[in-house]
Image (cartoon, rainbow, N blue to C red; front, side, top):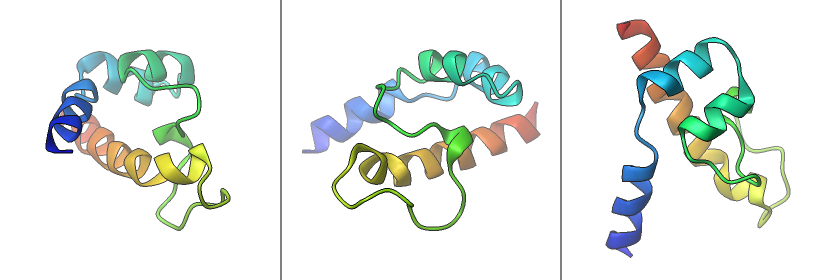
Length: 80
């Protein structure tokens, strides 16, 4: 399992392209910059609360990751 987590972290690096796409609210560019899968929730679509998606769905499973990505993107956006 740790190997899979490291691979996921490496795949989700916050790059200048990802920050620019986030800033522009460009869903397609953000998905590409973060190498996201179609069933994953975009960091642009999450909020601080619980997932509105049914348990076990792609939306519910990717909600916590999208929340973390949004926090990282917000921090990177403030730094630039």
